[in-house]
Length: 260
Image 1 (cartoon, helix red, strand yellow):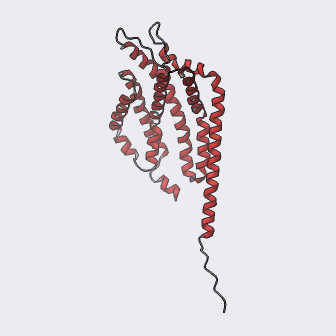
Image 2: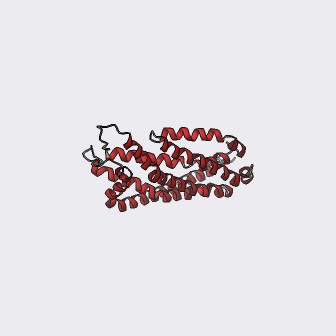
Image 3: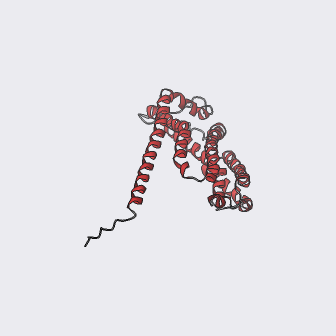
């Protein structure tokens, strides 16, 4: 009489394969993250010697509009040293963003369908370009207009002397806010691609988009009508760009057909 062999779980090899696949993905993610960090660190090391010059350039829109004799100040003991280094770090992230996005794309793209890659690749480039465009728009157009207004409304007897650390925080917030607001076309295309909205809803919702754009502009920008218009109007135009992009890129049922 033979002793029956114990039953072995049939799912064991599948579990091992799943564990090995997860481990290989984690290793690849670690490698991508290290490459991204290395790119940012290398750019930061290259920018550190020019940190003070970078800050001088960043402060130009305000300094050029300050009253005669006024200047930026440093209220913290270490601010003259730390603040330019913070700016160098922000600039390194800004310059290294294409490398970071490439590493992210290289990690994610193998799991995408072909039709998803065709849509995601231009969206990724558009998102990066629009963010840079929003930052440039804020620096060259919005900040000079905002500082001109703020200097003009300074009460008599009050001397405008801005702390360098607070100025950096304010400008970085403006860059980030305008960069995100300029992502409107990408957001519109993504919402249409996942089926949240369609072309007809986007067209019929123009009035709400306009109200929302100027509402966001009123919250984000400094308290002057010029800055609000300089953000609200581009957001409305970018919404129209997004509608046209949906018209050309998204076909009804295209994602379902591609997935099938």
